[in-house]
View 1 (spheres, rainbow, N blue to C red):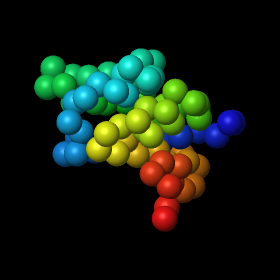
View 2: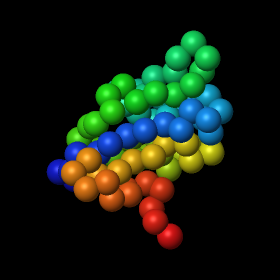
View 3: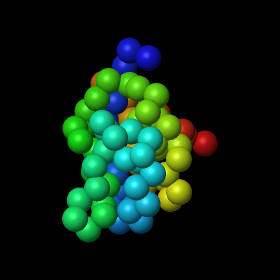
Length: 77
């Protein structure tokens, strides 16, 4: 993919399902309150992180292009 992504989790929306950790264990971790956090706020674009965002049951994961802020997921409608 070649781009750098800014990855955020809206903890007000996150329900702690753990799906993100299952899809991208190198990208996400759950804290003691079962709230998801990206392991690093920026990462190289990668399929597991995108799959985690797409699989989040409440769409709590936000991915933007680090250089421009353009949305990657969820896509603009």
